[in-house]
Each structure stands twice: as C-alpha cells, then as structure tokens.
Image 1: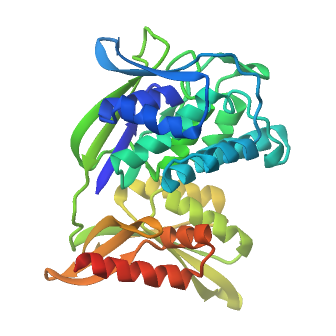
Image 2: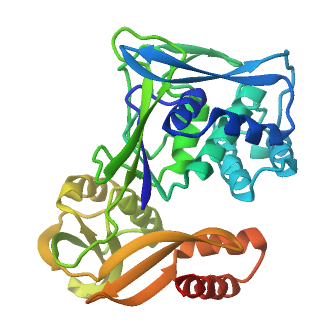
Image 3: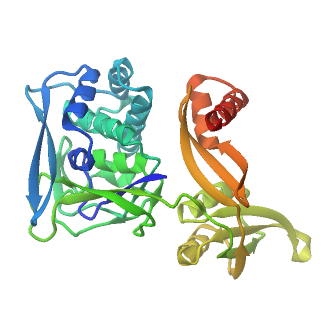
Length: 392
C-alpha cells in the first residue's frame, strides 16, 4: 500500500501543498499542463527551490497576471471543474475539497451553501491550488493519506471580511474533529484551502508512522519565520503488505440503560475516529428488567485513553470494563484496481498461503453507484468480476 504522510508542524496552505507534491516528484510542467485544462486565464505557476532554516524544498506560487473582480458561488466552481477536461477522479476530488470550504462558510455566515460567495477561495489562485492538489494526488497513485496534527498558527489575518483572529472562522470550522495545535507561529499557518485539502484527502491523523519511507519532500511557505521553519514535510512510504494473525488487542465495554438511542450513531462514528478497530452494540437486559445496550470497542492499547475520554464525554456511562484478548486474523493485504467506475480499493485475505477472499471496499462501491446512478448490487458485482479477471 502506497501511503502519503503529511507532517504539518508549520501548518498547510494550498501553495505549500503544491510545492511539497512537486518536491516529491510531480513534474512542474505536467502540473501546469493539467491545470491548463481548467480553461482559466490570467495566472501562471512559478516554481523554485528555496530554503527555510537551511532546509531546501520547493516553493510553488500562483501568480495572477491580471486583476480579477469575480466572486464565485459553488455552482460557478462546479461549472469550471465539470467543463474542464481533467480526469473524472481529479474532478471529484477537487469538488469534494471545495464543498468542504463551502460547508464551512455556510455555517459561519448562517446561509445556504449555494449562496456562499467564495472570496479568497473562489479566486483563480485558490482554484489552481485545489485542483492542483487533486491532480497531484492522482498522479502519485496514493492509496492512503495520513497526517500529523495540524498547526493552525496564531495572531490575526486580513481577509475579505476584515481582520480576523487565527484560525480564520472557516478554517476553525473545517478542522473540527481533527487534531490540531495552535501558537507555534504568530501567523496564519493553516489557510481554509490547506485545511480543506488535508481534511478531504486524509483518512487518519497520527504522529506515528508505521511504514517504510521511500521519499521525502518539502513544501516551502511564503513567510520566513525565525522560531520554526515555515515548511511542510511529506513522505511517500510503503506500508507492510501483510497483516499476520496472532496479536494482543483490548476490549472496552460498558452497559447503558439511560441513553437516547438517537445518540449512538454519533458516538459510534467518533469512536472510529479515535482509532477503534471495531464498535458494536448488543441489546441486553439489566436490573429491574430494563432494556439496555452493551457497547463493545476493540482497540489497540495506545487508543485506550482517548476512547475512555470520549465515552465519558459522549455517553451516559458511569464506568467501563477493559480487558485484554488474543486477536487472530487471516493474513491480509489492501490494494486497488482500475475499473470502469474508476480506482476501487480491494481487500485480500489468505489462510496458510491459500487465497480465501478478495472483495471491494464497500464505501468505494457506494460512491461509484451514487456517482453513476446505478444500483449498488450492479456496481458491486461488476467490480467483483473485475477483481477476479484482474487476478487471472
């Protein structure tokens, strides 16, 4: 599995991300040629080597060659991207990033998402940054993106709505539910564009890297900071191909008889975000014949404290049971194949070196079915056929 790891110790912005991707190996001319497919005029992409605290990286700057007065809505952005000749997967990723920004702006200003005026983020330079992020992600062939906690910065920033505290309100909304830090630098370290890129692409936030590092790249920020190098470091690595059977795991359990059932969906989602390997609910009967629910969480030892804190904050439990188990699994590998619906993740499993299972990632199948307005069963069966045809 090919992993892209973001180390955002000095934040992330759209241009830092482009610089880092070029530093990893995406050719600047390739990126420019792909961006030309947007059909936008009045810009150029300058790429140069630069240093921060003696560390050399790549600085990418979108330079406007003419003044633009347009304030775009989400529909305008969608029109630009959909009419472009970019790869469909790139279009989808770019729109997902823009939607993250639109949702945040709508929440901050308490307006409908379709009425949001994109100011800075609707400008050509930000469209280039976001589309460029999607292009680079596709070009690098990344299977999974992991990020460190994200530095937001400090102080104040000038924007279309005046001078605002860092993080800007849209950024603060976008980074909800992901680990962040503040105050290492006295400027806007993470922009709304950068926040939306990292939130959209990343499937896991962790300070631990469990992979073989193949290449390192640095994206150079526009500012120079005395206390901390204004860089974003990225790694491409290879995760272990196989997960083998036989290891220790932990189970956290609690019985609850006084919680609104509507709240379990939110609790379960947050438990997975905190690193739970599995969460399941079992109906039980407690004292005085009360109907209740037993919550069971399977996790690593390193996740126990975070999960305990979440359960005490988000559920009505008064106590937990924690015990160790021996977990045995088949040998597994995750990968992806190209299908008529785009690239789809695949899970493989073996027992005694004999393949026993190969099935598509169901979330990818659901996304493909919705995108193509097809029944999920039709998409799923087609991808299953493609998997076994690919194996042959």
